[in-house]
Amino acid sequence: MSYVKSFQVDPDRAVNLSKIDPDYTGPHENKAEALPEIEHYAQRLRELQYRLYAEHRRSLLICLQAMDAGGKDGTIRHVLGYMNPQSCRVQPFKVPTAEEAAHDFLWRTHKATPGRGEVAIFNRSHYEDVLVVRVHKLVPKEIWSARYEAINRFEHHLVGNGTQILKFFLHISKEEQLRRFRRRLEDPARQWKISEADYRERAYWDDYQAAYEDALNRCSTKNAPWYVIPANHKWFRNLAISKIVVQLLEGLDMNFPEPQVDIEALRQKYFSDG
Ligand code: AMP
Ligand code: MG
Image (cartoon, rainbow, N blue to C red; front, side, top):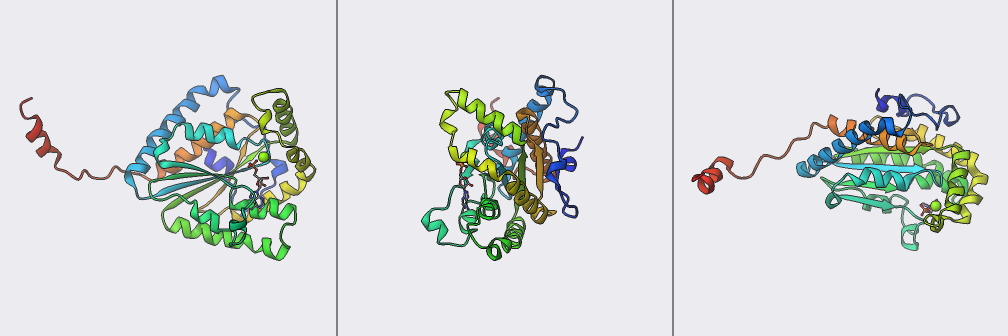
Protein backbone atom coordinates (compact mmCIF):
# COMPACT_ATOMS: atom_id res chain seq x y z
CA MET A 1 0.00 0.00 0.00
CA SER A 2 1.18 3.55 -0.69
CA TYR A 3 1.81 5.39 2.53
CA VAL A 4 2.45 8.49 0.45
CA LYS A 5 -1.15 8.42 -0.72
CA SER A 6 -2.62 7.35 2.60
CA PHE A 7 -0.95 9.93 4.80
CA GLN A 8 -0.31 12.93 2.59
CA VAL A 9 -2.43 15.97 3.37
CA ASP A 10 -4.23 16.68 0.11
CA PRO A 11 -3.64 20.35 -0.75
CA ASP A 12 -7.25 20.59 -1.94
CA ARG A 13 -9.01 18.99 1.01
CA ALA A 14 -9.32 20.04 4.63
CA VAL A 15 -7.72 17.64 7.10
CA ASN A 16 -9.52 16.90 10.35
CA LEU A 17 -7.14 15.44 12.91
CA SER A 18 -9.91 14.01 15.08
CA LYS A 19 -10.85 11.77 12.14
CA ILE A 20 -7.36 10.28 11.83
CA ASP A 21 -6.70 7.27 14.04
CA PRO A 22 -3.33 7.58 15.84
CA ASP A 23 -3.46 3.83 16.57
CA TYR A 24 -3.53 2.84 12.91
CA THR A 25 -0.95 0.24 11.89
CA GLY A 26 -1.99 -0.51 8.33
CA PRO A 27 -1.86 -4.15 7.31
CA HIS A 28 0.49 -4.99 10.20
CA GLU A 29 -0.53 -6.74 13.39
CA ASN A 30 2.57 -5.98 15.41
CA LYS A 31 6.22 -5.02 15.28
CA ALA A 32 7.57 -8.56 15.04
CA GLU A 33 5.52 -9.19 11.95
CA ALA A 34 6.49 -5.85 10.37
CA LEU A 35 10.19 -6.28 11.11
CA PRO A 36 11.31 -7.56 7.69
CA GLU A 37 9.64 -4.60 6.03
CA ILE A 38 11.09 -2.14 8.55
CA GLU A 39 14.54 -3.58 7.91
CA HIS A 40 14.07 -3.48 4.13
CA TYR A 41 13.17 0.21 4.04
CA ALA A 42 15.90 1.10 6.49
CA GLN A 43 18.48 -0.49 4.18
CA ARG A 44 17.01 1.27 1.13
CA LEU A 45 17.28 4.53 3.03
CA ARG A 46 20.97 3.89 3.51
CA GLU A 47 21.57 3.18 -0.19
CA LEU A 48 19.56 6.13 -1.43
CA GLN A 49 21.14 8.60 0.95
CA TYR A 50 24.54 7.50 -0.31
CA ARG A 51 23.40 8.26 -3.86
CA LEU A 52 22.08 11.67 -2.84
CA TYR A 53 25.46 12.44 -1.31
CA ALA A 54 27.44 11.13 -4.29
CA GLU A 55 25.23 12.91 -6.81
CA HIS A 56 25.70 16.24 -5.01
CA ARG A 57 22.89 17.90 -6.92
CA ARG A 58 19.92 17.92 -4.63
CA SER A 59 19.22 17.98 -0.91
CA LEU A 60 16.58 16.61 1.43
CA LEU A 61 14.85 18.51 4.21
CA ILE A 62 12.71 16.59 6.68
CA CYS A 63 10.62 18.61 9.14
CA LEU A 64 9.31 16.85 12.23
CA GLN A 65 6.54 18.33 14.30
CA ALA A 66 4.56 16.74 17.12
CA MET A 67 3.02 17.35 20.50
CA ASP A 68 5.35 16.77 23.46
CA ALA A 69 6.39 13.10 23.71
CA GLY A 70 5.12 12.65 20.17
CA GLY A 71 8.26 10.76 19.16
CA LYS A 72 10.45 13.24 17.31
CA ASP A 73 13.64 12.06 19.03
CA GLY A 74 12.86 8.39 18.41
CA THR A 75 12.10 9.07 14.76
CA ILE A 76 15.41 10.86 14.36
CA ARG A 77 17.28 7.94 15.95
CA HIS A 78 15.60 5.51 13.60
CA VAL A 79 15.78 7.43 10.33
CA LEU A 80 19.20 8.89 10.92
CA GLY A 81 20.55 5.68 12.35
CA TYR A 82 20.76 4.36 8.82
CA MET A 83 22.32 7.38 7.23
CA ASN A 84 25.93 8.39 6.87
CA PRO A 85 26.54 11.10 9.50
CA GLN A 86 29.02 12.74 7.13
CA SER A 87 26.21 14.34 5.14
CA CYS A 88 23.36 14.45 7.67
CA ARG A 89 22.47 17.02 10.24
CA VAL A 90 19.81 17.41 12.92
CA GLN A 91 18.71 20.93 13.65
CA PRO A 92 16.65 21.54 16.80
CA PHE A 93 14.42 24.62 17.05
CA LYS A 94 14.15 25.99 20.56
CA VAL A 95 12.81 29.23 21.99
CA PRO A 96 14.51 31.84 19.79
CA THR A 97 17.70 33.36 21.15
CA ALA A 98 17.92 37.15 21.40
CA GLU A 99 19.75 37.25 18.09
CA GLU A 100 17.20 35.01 16.36
CA ALA A 101 14.30 36.98 17.81
CA ALA A 102 15.81 40.18 16.42
CA HIS A 103 15.46 38.80 12.87
CA ASP A 104 12.54 37.70 10.72
CA PHE A 105 11.23 34.28 11.73
CA LEU A 106 12.69 32.46 8.72
CA TRP A 107 16.23 33.73 9.26
CA ARG A 108 17.34 30.90 11.51
CA THR A 109 15.50 28.39 9.35
CA HIS A 110 17.17 29.42 6.12
CA LYS A 111 20.63 29.14 7.68
CA ALA A 112 19.90 25.55 8.68
CA THR A 113 18.69 24.28 5.29
CA PRO A 114 20.66 21.43 3.70
CA GLY A 115 23.24 22.06 0.99
CA ARG A 116 23.61 19.89 -2.13
CA GLY A 117 24.05 16.25 -1.25
CA GLU A 118 22.98 16.80 2.33
CA VAL A 119 20.07 15.72 4.50
CA ALA A 120 18.80 18.01 7.26
CA ILE A 121 16.26 16.90 9.81
CA PHE A 122 14.46 19.67 11.65
CA ASN A 123 13.47 18.72 15.20
CA ARG A 124 10.61 21.24 15.32
CA SER A 125 10.88 23.89 12.64
CA HIS A 126 9.71 27.24 11.33
CA TYR A 127 6.19 25.91 11.94
CA GLU A 128 6.60 26.68 15.66
CA ASP A 129 6.02 30.26 14.57
CA VAL A 130 2.42 29.40 13.70
CA LEU A 131 1.98 26.82 16.50
CA VAL A 132 3.34 27.68 19.96
CA VAL A 133 3.46 31.34 18.96
CA ARG A 134 -0.22 31.30 17.99
CA VAL A 135 -1.44 29.17 20.90
CA HIS A 136 0.32 31.36 23.45
CA LYS A 137 -0.37 34.62 21.62
CA LEU A 138 3.32 35.51 21.53
CA VAL A 139 2.66 37.85 18.61
CA PRO A 140 -0.59 39.46 17.42
CA LYS A 141 -2.83 37.57 15.00
CA GLU A 142 -2.00 39.91 12.08
CA ILE A 143 1.59 38.79 12.37
CA TRP A 144 1.20 35.01 12.68
CA SER A 145 -1.62 34.79 10.17
CA ALA A 146 0.60 36.26 7.46
CA ARG A 147 3.23 33.61 8.10
CA TYR A 148 1.52 30.71 6.30
CA GLU A 149 1.95 32.51 3.00
CA ALA A 150 5.51 33.47 3.86
CA ILE A 151 6.26 29.82 4.66
CA ASN A 152 4.77 28.64 1.36
CA ARG A 153 6.84 31.14 -0.60
CA PHE A 154 9.99 30.23 1.31
CA GLU A 155 9.51 26.49 0.78
CA HIS A 156 8.70 27.05 -2.89
CA HIS A 157 11.96 28.92 -3.22
CA LEU A 158 13.90 26.04 -1.62
CA VAL A 159 12.21 23.46 -3.85
CA GLY A 160 13.15 25.55 -6.88
CA ASN A 161 16.74 25.30 -5.76
CA GLY A 162 16.82 21.51 -5.59
CA THR A 163 15.70 20.88 -2.02
CA GLN A 164 13.20 18.08 -1.57
CA ILE A 165 10.92 18.81 1.38
CA LEU A 166 8.98 16.34 3.48
CA LYS A 167 7.05 17.45 6.54
CA PHE A 168 5.77 14.95 9.09
CA PHE A 169 3.28 15.54 11.85
CA LEU A 170 3.55 12.67 14.32
CA HIS A 171 -0.04 12.19 15.41
CA ILE A 172 -0.51 10.76 18.92
CA SER A 173 -3.60 10.75 21.12
CA LYS A 174 -3.88 12.73 24.32
CA GLU A 175 -4.09 9.46 26.27
CA GLU A 176 -0.93 8.14 24.64
CA GLN A 177 0.87 11.33 25.60
CA LEU A 178 -0.10 10.79 29.23
CA ARG A 179 1.06 7.15 29.08
CA ARG A 180 4.43 8.33 27.77
CA PHE A 181 4.69 10.98 30.49
CA ARG A 182 3.99 8.30 33.08
CA ARG A 183 6.67 6.02 31.64
CA ARG A 184 9.11 8.90 31.90
CA LEU A 185 8.25 9.31 35.58
CA GLU A 186 8.94 5.65 36.22
CA ASP A 187 12.06 5.19 34.12
CA PRO A 188 15.25 6.67 35.62
CA ALA A 189 16.78 6.77 32.13
CA ARG A 190 13.97 9.02 30.92
CA GLN A 191 13.37 11.25 33.93
CA TRP A 192 15.76 13.86 32.58
CA LYS A 193 13.30 14.53 29.76
CA ILE A 194 10.49 15.58 32.11
CA SER A 195 9.51 19.21 32.18
CA GLU A 196 6.52 20.39 34.14
CA ALA A 197 5.77 22.76 31.29
CA ASP A 198 4.91 19.71 29.17
CA TYR A 199 2.12 18.85 31.63
CA ARG A 200 0.88 22.44 31.64
CA GLU A 201 0.79 22.42 27.83
CA ARG A 202 -1.79 19.60 27.96
CA ALA A 203 -4.34 22.23 28.94
CA TYR A 204 -3.83 23.70 25.46
CA TRP A 205 -4.19 20.40 23.61
CA ASP A 206 -7.25 21.47 21.60
CA ASP A 207 -5.73 24.81 20.70
CA TYR A 208 -2.63 23.03 19.44
CA GLN A 209 -4.68 20.58 17.39
CA ALA A 210 -6.52 23.51 15.80
CA ALA A 211 -3.25 25.32 15.10
CA TYR A 212 -1.80 22.14 13.59
CA GLU A 213 -4.85 21.65 11.39
CA ASP A 214 -4.47 25.17 10.01
CA ALA A 215 -0.76 24.71 9.36
CA LEU A 216 -1.39 21.36 7.65
CA ASN A 217 -4.22 22.72 5.57
CA ARG A 218 -2.59 25.94 4.53
CA CYS A 219 0.95 24.70 3.99
CA SER A 220 0.60 21.24 2.45
CA THR A 221 1.60 21.94 -1.13
CA LYS A 222 2.31 19.70 -4.08
CA ASN A 223 6.06 20.15 -3.78
CA ALA A 224 6.32 20.44 -0.02
CA PRO A 225 3.60 18.18 1.32
CA TRP A 226 2.63 17.51 4.89
CA TYR A 227 2.08 13.96 6.10
CA VAL A 228 0.04 13.03 9.16
CA ILE A 229 1.64 9.88 10.55
CA PRO A 230 -0.31 7.71 13.03
CA ALA A 231 2.27 7.61 15.79
CA ASN A 232 0.85 5.88 18.87
CA HIS A 233 2.87 2.83 17.78
CA LYS A 234 6.49 3.78 17.45
CA TRP A 235 7.42 0.94 15.11
CA PHE A 236 4.64 1.85 12.70
CA ARG A 237 5.62 5.51 12.77
CA ASN A 238 9.22 4.58 11.89
CA LEU A 239 8.12 2.24 9.12
CA ALA A 240 5.70 4.75 7.57
CA ILE A 241 8.26 7.55 7.59
CA SER A 242 11.13 5.51 6.17
CA LYS A 243 8.82 4.17 3.48
CA ILE A 244 7.73 7.68 2.46
CA VAL A 245 11.29 9.00 2.43
CA VAL A 246 12.40 6.00 0.34
CA GLN A 247 9.58 6.52 -2.14
CA LEU A 248 10.51 10.18 -2.59
CA LEU A 249 14.21 9.41 -3.05
CA GLU A 250 13.49 6.58 -5.49
CA GLY A 251 11.47 9.01 -7.57
CA LEU A 252 14.50 11.27 -7.97
CA ASP A 253 16.19 8.73 -10.21
CA MET A 254 19.62 9.53 -8.82
CA ASN A 255 22.77 8.47 -10.56
CA PHE A 256 26.37 8.28 -9.48
CA PRO A 257 28.47 10.97 -11.17
CA GLU A 258 30.59 9.82 -14.11
CA PRO A 259 34.12 8.85 -13.01
CA GLN A 260 36.60 11.67 -13.51
CA VAL A 261 39.32 9.31 -14.69
CA ASP A 262 39.73 6.78 -17.48
CA ILE A 263 38.92 3.58 -15.58
CA GLU A 264 40.22 1.27 -18.31
CA ALA A 265 43.47 3.20 -18.65
CA LEU A 266 44.08 2.98 -14.91
CA ARG A 267 43.33 -0.74 -14.92
CA GLN A 268 45.84 -1.26 -17.74
CA LYS A 269 48.49 0.95 -16.22
CA TYR A 270 48.45 -0.42 -12.67
CA PHE A 271 47.02 -3.92 -12.93
CA SER A 272 48.09 -5.12 -16.36
CA ASP A 273 50.32 -7.82 -14.85
CA GLY A 274 47.26 -9.57 -13.34
P1 AMP B 1 12.15 20.85 23.18
O1 AMP B 1 11.98 20.59 21.69
O2 AMP B 1 11.33 19.95 24.03
O3 AMP B 1 13.57 20.93 23.57
O4 AMP B 1 11.53 22.29 23.48
C1 AMP B 1 11.77 23.39 22.71
C2 AMP B 1 10.76 24.45 23.08
O5 AMP B 1 11.01 25.60 22.27
C3 AMP B 1 9.33 24.02 22.82
O6 AMP B 1 8.54 24.30 23.94
C4 AMP B 1 8.93 24.88 21.64
O7 AMP B 1 7.56 25.18 21.62
C5 AMP B 1 9.78 26.11 21.85
N1 AMP B 1 9.95 26.87 20.60
C6 AMP B 1 10.46 26.45 19.44
N2 AMP B 1 10.40 27.40 18.51
C7 AMP B 1 9.81 28.48 19.09
C8 AMP B 1 9.46 29.77 18.64
N3 AMP B 1 9.69 30.15 17.40
N4 AMP B 1 8.88 30.60 19.51
C9 AMP B 1 8.65 30.22 20.78
N5 AMP B 1 8.95 29.01 21.27
C10 AMP B 1 9.52 28.13 20.44
MG1 MG C 1 9.82 19.25 25.35
